[in-house]
Image (cartoon, rainbow, N blue to C red; front, top):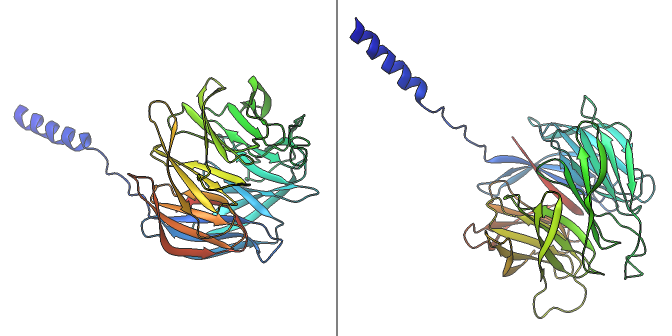
Length: 376
């Protein structure tokens, strides 16, 4: 009897000791496209996109919106928020997102407390949306309500100052909001004053206070624009719109320490560059940045020990004015939103070399300016 009991105990223990089978990730994602609606665009476009094959299919369009440009998806992927990038009465839109149908249902519209809101981010708790107003040179925080809609702004912080270019830097121009993985540190590149401003978020109250230090100064006339954190949590990078450069930083305890600035320009290019967007591959090995005059992506490898960048190659975007781009969550494809050629070009990414190969596939969308993906 004792032997039988021991045998049964062994069998039960073996069964429960086995690891639960891994849930297979779907190859399909929803691709959301923010646009400018001054031309033929009707609003926010949603597509089904396969990250294994690069195939796509249109799902829906959220219409009746003015310049729903930059998008951000809530941490639980149930809601989407968009900057309504207009001169007067800048708006922030909120939507419920139905993963089954791929449709957006508008929940609310709130003022951004400034003109030309060009960027939004959401904190890790999903309770606070922060918008950056390029025209007004300020940032505004809005509370997320129980149904996913937005309440009225609770705080607006005005930047002050100017820099050396009288045509572009006559005053502050907030260009992006970037919430660190710790959900406390917030970095706000301001093109108009050549500073990356720093803030600390209290996620319980939604209150922003000045960071320590309050800002990181960058080169005069550089025009810091978009910003990204490395997956290692130790480095961060900013792209400078006006000089066409990328700066690398060590990031620690809310502070940025510059370690490198490298040009995105090919040796034979002269004149303006108008750099725009910046992203790091999911494996943390490569950094990509877009240039809207040269119509290219520049590719760098990232030193895993120092965080410094080494030039790899330039890739034509096969379009005009690549305002925004994204790397799909698996790292297989890079999709580029070409604002002035009304297309999203799709590239296959070599995970070992970091280089890109055109697939020959593209999505026809009027004035695309922002790309986001949501899982199925």
